[in-house]
Length: 162
Image (cartoon, rainbow, N blue to C red; front, side, top):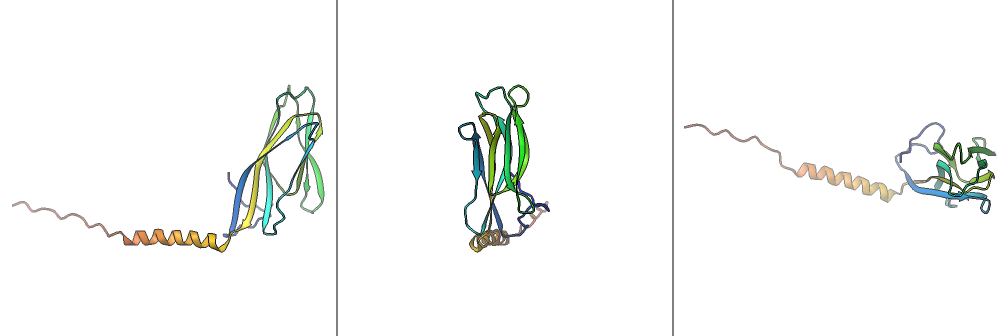
């Protein structure tokens, strides 16, 4: 899993940003037609959902299953966008690459009865604590000290033939 900073990302590339990733999955059906992804209410954490695949589950009927996501756009307005139109016979799965959304996100089965599985990665960005940074610095200092303690290697002396 890689996370790279680009102009559209809301996380600035600083040396003290910590990023954790966790597996995400939910199943949508006529019984459970939507899933709301929310992050914790902690102020120093930002939660992102990186959607990767949307696929029909076992027992899906021969019908169109439309999956839609609702999230905030760059202007702060809530917008809904269909991300997949799945059908058993012609398109049972869609790969979304790394479709990243900032929490809160609602994933909805707009049409069809499913089951539809949505999977991806839950990313949590936080400011790294000073103790985390100091541990890394201490490890680097220890590595440097070990390198300094090694004696230098001198070439072997040649024996003189008598």
